[in-house]
Length: 280
Image 1 (tube, rainbow, N blue to C red):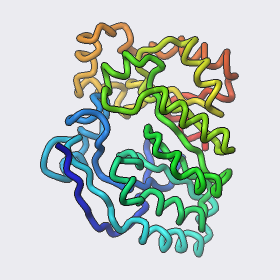
Image 2: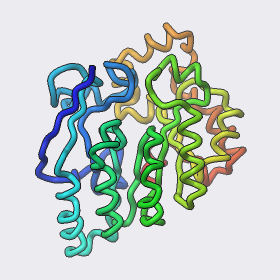
Image 3: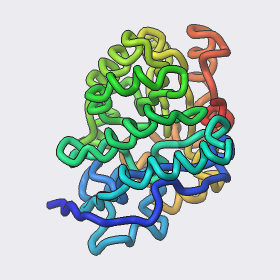
Image 4: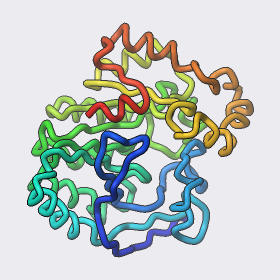
């Protein structure tokens, strides 16, 4: 059983860098994550970080809502605008949680943040989620126009793979349908294949071409910030072995998908790992 907690925070925007070097700040409306089973998604590196101990119980069993975040954000955006930095500021939302946790339906913290951004838009916001709940906010996303990239995580095109790795996450069909609706609404829409799970490259490319303006492919070895060591420490090699996907857990396993995607969509629409996420 998951617990939902509230917390007041001192700031909404957190300075960032490293993997997200193209972004000045991250914005995380929640701490923790209710996707995945009661241990979270098996590949989530955040569960191995200090933030995973922000509440009692294992990662995946609790979510903390930053209940005053939407009140703080307008003041911080005003300060950035006053110092003439806002028009150059890129924000990643979110780097250590999903901004559309289930409790968002009631709390609307992410929606409140988007409303603040619509009033004072920064240069760019990358809104990263795997939840179709993002479709609720199409009105605000449209207001943000070119200031926003809506990024939907879809790790594989194969439902049997999704069920094996993340059985409680939204279905592939629901996520792709959401991406299609966003794109049809005129919102710049991205599919984040991150991390890439076992897939059928040709089928995946066909699906992505229909619903996304661009695609980013990332891997355990390029995207976990440690050349794959962090993912190995989470037991991903053993999990792939146990599920019969051993050949997929290796550097270079992404090359077929990259080549097929670029052949189908064109190189400009298919980006890779760190450089892709920072191409804002």
